[in-house]
Image (tube, rainbow over all chains, first blue to last red):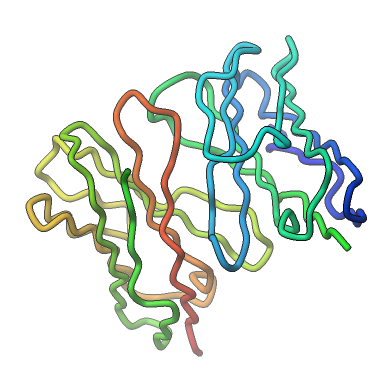
Length: 113
Length: 114
């Protein structure tokens, strides 16, 4: 059974650009969450989608957005990149709602220059 | 807002020994769940153990066990018979019942020495 797949694994952007990250959940999983991981702030919740609906959102500016497709794949987008957006972005999936086990991908490492 | 505190940024232990990682949390909720996640150097996080707040019995998964002190809002992880493969970052996490959001501590970097 394939795990959570995130693409791209590494990318470099410059300030002001935008970026789109992709996440393919484990087959059958309908919930996808996104987290930002930085050395200073640690792991912070961005948002969660279930059946194409955003159910929860963290305290991030509107430059951070996401969506989920009918096949449960998810994308997140960051517009007008800032240096502080440099981070490891982790995607996690689970089968349903509630406190089921989260399965994480290996992350997308974004560097903003 | 809930907060999770891991007071030990780094720890080390000898192979086959036992180590305890500390975690405290702050919440006014009564329905919540607590987790320990492991992030090896390859970066993929995996669930180590979970605890439901309404359960008094401490969770155990093979060599991993927790000491859940609800009144003290403490949730420590004990690793017995430490193995080299246990070397990783360990994150304590809190989830309020009905929410999909996990609140993580800053992590403890554990090194198991041969």
